[in-house]
Amino acid sequence: MPDPLSKRAALATPPSLARKIRGLSDRTIAWIFIAPTIFLLLAVNIFPLIWTIRLSLTNFRTNRPNNAVEFVGIENYRKILTDSDTWTSLQATAHFLIWTIVLQVLIGFTLAYLINKKFRGNDMWTTLIVLPMMLSPAVVGNFWTFLYQPQIGLFNYFISFLTGTDPASFSMIGEVPLAPWAIVIVDTWMWTPFVMLICLAGLRSIPSSIYEAAECDRASKWRQFWTITLPMALPFLMLAVLFRGIENFKMFDLVVQLTGGGPGATTQLTSIDLKREAFEKWRTGYASAYAVILFVTVFGLASIYVKALNKVKDR
Amino acid sequence: MSFSITEPSNRQKWIAGVLVIAYALITLMPLAWIIATGFKTPADAIAYPPKVIFEPSVEGYVNLFTSRSRVTPEDLAALPPPETFYDEIVRQYDMVITGPSKYGERFLNSIIIGFGSTFLSVFLGTIAAYAFSRFKVPLKDDLLFFILSTRMMPPIAVAIPIFLMYRQLGLSDTHLGMILLYTAVNLSLSVWLLKGFIDEIPIEYEEAALIDGYTRFQAFYKVVLPQAATGIASTAIFCLIFAWNEYAFAVLLTSGTAQTAPPFIPTIIGAGGKDWPAVAAGATLFLVPIMVFTILLRKHLLRGITFGAVRK
Image (cartoon, each protein chain N blue to C red):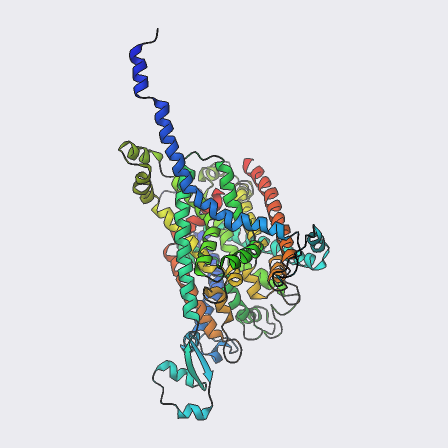
């Protein structure tokens, strides 16, 4: 026999109802708070993406709006993948990607390792090293063309000072064999600090007790580096590689200002090639297909990489 | 300080310090060169060997802020004597000032668009991050991943439809258009960074406030906001730096009214080819505020970079 008093008490303060009202209002607030963000991202990212996919199946040209727009199926995709220019750009991008990542990881990790020795004033010097990555790539890239001038450029002067070659004898951005390295050098100069900061975070996350234990076991410094430091900093290093990889696959501003893709097409990275197709030749449909291919490539490569990264993390 | 067997020896510290400082000095040289070139005369700027010691001149700055035209020596002689120091500098080259250059406007555009989009992305980012942090949102992880993934898109890839869309809506080359665009680009970073900061604030504070009779909104702006202030400030700096430095969208979507400084500075030219002191002066004024910012706010900034990266 249920107690009538407790029954009445339950009716007076129905907990489920109270929670419901409060939960409902929370939910409303949640949607009010999230909706503008989602709306803006849909409008500026997803809607354009869908539009790009649609355009990529047509022969639309922005500079000829009166031409009939025809549905051409996967014709644009076929053309891009069989065009040798595309592969030239992809090669230039691959060269740029691989070398910037290799150099930035090597220099960035070394710097982080040295800074982690905690010499006096390391905070201040870290901040100064970080300065280049905070600045506008277009403005800085443009000024680097001045540093790269034969004869009068500071970079050429510096190289001639170190090696004794005539500073007027080479042009970093004007010569086919040198230009791909010119963009690698500036990107490395600019973004090594980023890799350094992430490596530093990784090194600082290693508890010192592990090193103390290793010291007690008389493990050499060399051994400690290979069995403790490197494996424990590896997930951070891989993360830095992921970010630099995505960013440099999209690279546009720095290189377009430095070389404009030249000489010839030696530094014409995919983004620059895409910009030419879309906004100089105005082949909108073709360029849209190109954009879709690039996006799928970045997304695909990044997903595979993240899987590998998670495996390393879980180890 | 207590002795620790893992503390690097003084010799190690010394070597590490020397190497890091050497790297820093080399890496700062291009920046020092930008600032120095701004104070050179055009002749000094292209001298060989590069001049480290030179007589400072404000010619670059005068050329940056004015537009000039060439006059014949006879016309120049017929003019009344120069009234200002900048008139005098310009007349040495048989030129007269015809009016201000566009640099001032472009710089102002950078300020308006930079601060406008920073305010919007931090505002929207804060409330969205709060909702993601505190409420049960259906498909939360998917939504958060969606927000993050928008950052992977190459700007040039979305630029085509945005270009067409903006033309239809009359948003091309407007401040509003650029503010909305930069806000959208920054939102993913802003939501993720801020969610991290708000997650760190103990939920008990708000619960206490709610029990004391605060509404959700009151608890949000009287309890959560003050505690997240540092996080909001460092997020704001990141958004501002991005919007300040952005080039790809700016060069494609603006040409006049709303053009920011990054696409403008490289187009500065002098009478006989590139006027490097003027370009360097323009770059200096544009870059130095960010350098000062970075040095003053280093703690929050450096933490923010790694924090944002490590969380993802």
